[in-house]
Length: 551
Image 1 (cartoon, rainbow, N blue to C red):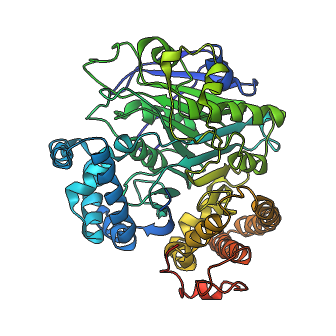
Image 2: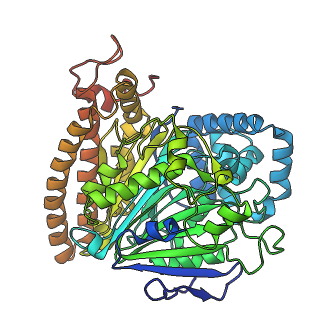
């Protein structure tokens, strides 16, 4: 880890406390050779969304201004949604702004500098944008999300596989961050206007992503970092799961979250609660982080606490709630793992992320009846995101960690929108070495065209969820075959001492596939007359002719 030391894990299912460095106490557990054990531990007890490409480089001021300039329209839209959420919660916008000013000093200086420049580039108020970064994830709430991690005997080829479905509202961007002397480069997905990220993959073959967790309204810690901020810090500073666990232990936490993290050897789920030095709502001996490693099996996570002591805190101490959509998605994850025989490939995990079992469930009491171990008063209902892929899924990432050349050949399969309405496009982490070329080549993703086509496919086929998945899967199979050839050639370049040429080659091929994915979606469209040519090959899109159209 840059500027930090790693830690060692505990033995199989053993729990070990580590001395806290700064905040809280750390608990690490290990899953080894017991597929799906993370699931069993606890059991014993809007659619304005888009995907742009933003390439960031230079000082915090340069990165922030470019970010704001490139995604200004999307940032302004997300700020509008944030203030609507504030008002919906009967909060005072003036009070939220004042709160952000009072607590500005708790935000790291580089982050403040980048957000201030981002506000200037997007032509928005700095304090408004700071407030969204500090409180946006808690004001909106109930964001959903589902994650999988598989390692060792839990995967077909022994390479680690991980995933995150993002269930939220708000305009999304694909962020490409160049490495610096202090930080690793990464590719990631986030909401426009946020300094932090939702999920991503760095140049060291470390991926991460978080799930929102329900906690009491009065439990948030004003001095802590939000989950999106922590996600980016992990990608910038960590090269291994152990380093990520240590960093999450060190960082003060604002709210409740579960971070999925994986490297080329193992994965982990890191459950967190708000940090609080005074312990006014939490026993001082209670850690603010519990990590469960996945070293040789497969596990999943949704939006409720699974691990002790948090699981019992929810059930018996009124800490947060058990959310019916989360339990449903978690149960579906267990079902999919069992049906797969506890061994998966990245291809199967992609199919998990598209699973529509129990889509739109209108009978949450059925879920409660299936879980008599959970007291009735602990339940909370919510929007009907009961299937892993649901109406609020806005993007998805599936990660394959390379053991041959992890710094270039690890992949982030990216669904630019809901994965039932677009193919997963594979991007190698070599792309962070060629960000300018990627940003230029991926203009249709940058100007909103790609997401517009995907949204249009959904809008004209709203009653036929999953109808296009077989076609997308066929395209992904062909992409997978081409990837194998691309990576063989890239390895030959690396072996002959040409790593720069290998990175450029992989970036060129990845971008070509991303453009081909748009052509595929266009070929499936039944477009409004005059909006698109039904037989378009996509050349109009690539030249920007329809990039500013609205769905």
